[in-house]
Length: 110
Length: 114
Image 1 (cartoon, rainbow over the protein chains, first blue to last red):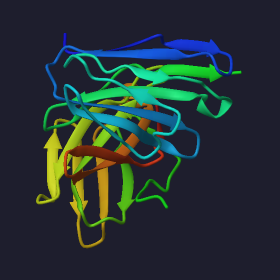
Image 2 (cartoon, rainbow over the protein chains, first blue to last red):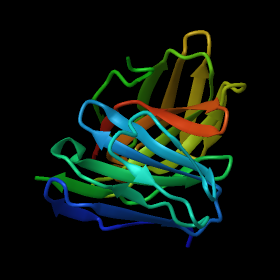
Image 3 (cartoon, each protein chain N blue to C red):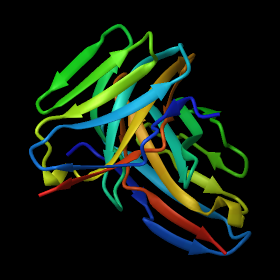
């Protein structure tokens, strides 16, 4: 089954404790992207990747890092999480058509 | 400034009737428009799309209409079913170099009543 998976689905952490949210797709897509969804602001792009070792900033990259060492994986790294990064995060991948989304990761930073 | 606007936060229709969800945009550079459906605790699921060079695309019960002069698109669901109850997002693609970024509306929550 074609899918995008994310882990963990839910995470509660404390300020400053480094964390990684994993994302994996099995569709051999070159393009992958991370979004965050916040009330009243909709989905906003954090980072994207056009292919292995090719990443670039989206609209709200501050406080985040990504890496793309393999085509299927695109982890989102928060080196020092802060409360304003409490949000719902979605990973997506696509070929040239529509983007496919993972189930989301709800992150709470205390 | 919202480049993609869904002005109705919610919509309620009777089962079997037509649901019409609307979306307005401001950027003439959008080349592709998509509708996604989202259930609670799940990621957005692609529903239907339309290229900026078309004015209509149909897929089963779902039809999307694009009016470029008015910068407006709409999603029609006929007939509506209770399982269609979800949040519907309009998204537009900016083909800016290598980034196939989607710009999203805030969503319309559709309730289809039996």
